[in-house]
Length: 119
Image 1 (spheres, rainbow, N blue to C red):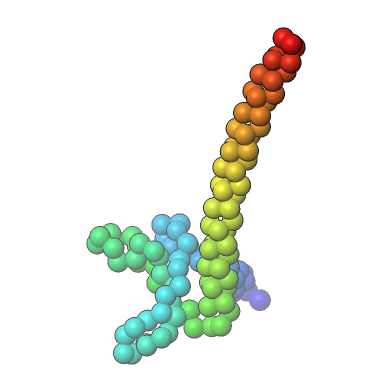
Image 2: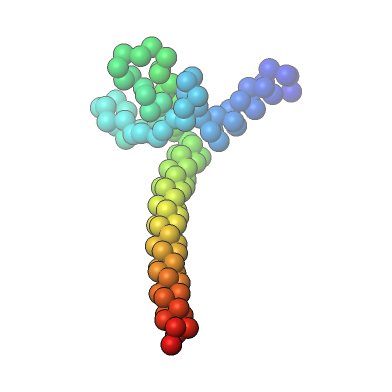
C-alpha cells in the first residue's frame, strides 16, 4: 500500500469518528429537504452559510449507515451529558441546602445546650 493511500485512509477514519469543519467546530448531521436529495443525510458546520462568513463552508454527504449512526450516537451522548450536568448542578444545590439546614440545627443545639447549662 502506498503512503498516499495510507494517509488518505487514516484521514477518512478520523473524519468519520470526529468530523471537524475548517474552523475546528464539530460538524452536525442534517437531512436534505431539496427535491434532488430529499432526506439524504449530510454533515455540515453549525456555522455553515451564516452571516456570509467565507470559512464556514464544510459540507459532506453522509450516506453510509456508519456516518449516520456515529453522528446520532454523538448527538445522544451530548444530550445525556447535558442532562447529567443538570442533575449534577441539582445535587450540588441540594447539598448546599442540606448544609444550611445542618448549620441551623447546630445553632439550635448550641442555644439549647447553653440554656440547659444555665439551669
